[in-house]
Amino acid sequence: MENDSENLAAASAWRGLGGPISDRDAGVRADLYLAKAYPFLTRSGWQKRMDLGEVLINERAIKGSYKLKTDDRVSFYHPESEEPDVDRNIFVIWQEGSVMAVFKPGNLPMHENGAYRKNTFAHLMNENIGSEWSAVHRLDRETSGIVLCGANNVVRQKLAADFEAKNIKKEYLLIAKGVPSISSWSIDGAIGDLTQSKIRIKKWVVDGGLSAQTDFVVEKTIGEGAAGYSLIRAFPKTGRTNQIRIHAAYSGHWILGDKLYHPNEEVFLDYWESQRTTDFCVEQTLFNRCCLHAAALTFVHPETGKTVRVESLLPVDMQQLWARLESL
Image 1 (tube, rainbow, N blue to C red):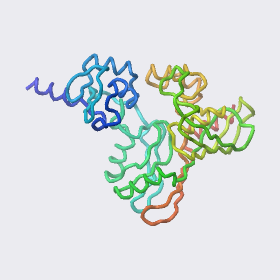
Image 2: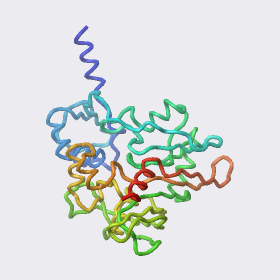
Image 3: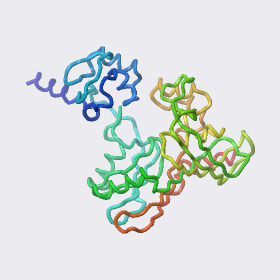
Image 4: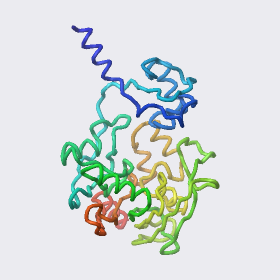
């Protein structure tokens, strides 16, 4: 009986990683695929897990050099452990019919990933608001603000298609270092991998990258020049990963709390090594999370055909930060 319990506990620790391998990924080395698709571990980190027999393909242990085949199924040994603390304060901002706008606080991942299982936006939606509701887009873990949700597949598919077609207007608020010399500007800079960096996952404005455009408008400032701070509204015209953060930093105005795009790469390396926001991270970036807030969405309601604008005020933590900066 005891052995049966141990076997059951061991079996429950194996978690499937996504669906079966697609034709596109067939032929790719297993360690390269895992490091790109699941970056909570580096390539060497995945190799170590494989050497320990903690990665299975089709229920058999494999090495990093294994070449993936179409329809392979990958599993990862990940026993239950205590999850990191998160801000669980989600709430409904607006609802009409089968469409709902929900506030996501900073420090809350959207979906299960790595150490996060139940401390996620998706789980909290199911637990607190209703199992029929699901998000139709995503925000980064440290980004606060509006998440649009749908109560059925028809609504979700229509809204997702509108996001894909760039028919939904998005607005963000951010607190950045420095005061720009102009009140508004646009960055039309393609985004791709940054080869000359210590950080493998870092992207930047590069030749030959994916097209990306962000418009910026300054709303408030504190102080002057590089020593000051700015509250800026950003209008992303495309939806590349980390686009606003990259374009803000590329403009010379990195977002407070942003560890990945802070000018000192040792900040992110310290965060990555520690797997937490350390005192050094806060000291360098001036905040405990990236000061980026999804402030407004304008879209056509898929059921009524009406144009809807939903807004979310600057969250309390960013308001308090701004007040603190004003008092310096």
